[in-house]
Amino acid sequence: MLTANRFEQLSVIDKLTIIFEEGEELYTRNTDGFSIKLYQLNDFFCEIWYSSEANKVYKIELIDENQVVGLYNIDIDLNSLLNPN
Image (cartoon, rainbow, N blue to C red; front, side, top):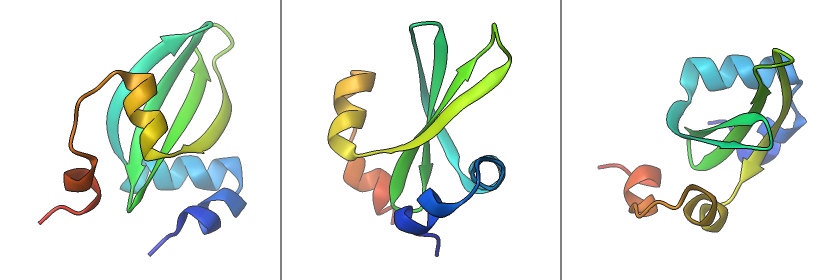
């Protein structure tokens, strides 16, 4: 299983490939001209920062559960997302 530490070591292209093939898109937020998509991969979350104006991915970064709740203003049970039964 891919870990967050291993994910961080991958190239941007490899990260995007894994996100699009294995990740689950959860939410989108918009800020400062970026469309920021939140994905879940295994037991961690990551964001893709995309600018439609430049048609470019600017960064892909890990985000922890506390940031997810705060940034996306959502009331979800993160345990059910991370440990589905």
